[in-house]
Image (cartoon, rainbow, N blue to C red):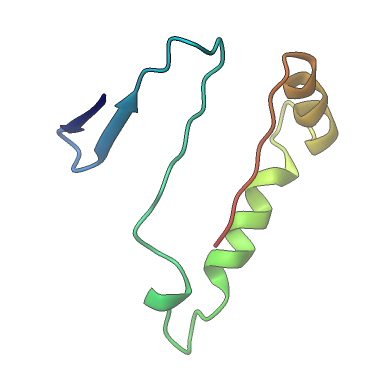
Length: 79
């Protein structure tokens, strides 16, 4: 069964419980991307997608990937 909830900030939350598995999956879809870009900012969505995986002030990209790998996780994106 899928539960659908509209959040106060306008985001839509969809939750599906699968009791036969002991994992979680989280997907975030944002109404943006190249279809909403102008000639002035063409390609910015794709660039931001790649920048998300470059790391942060406390962890570089390799550290983040290794920490997620230790718990069986992975991160991916598409635009």
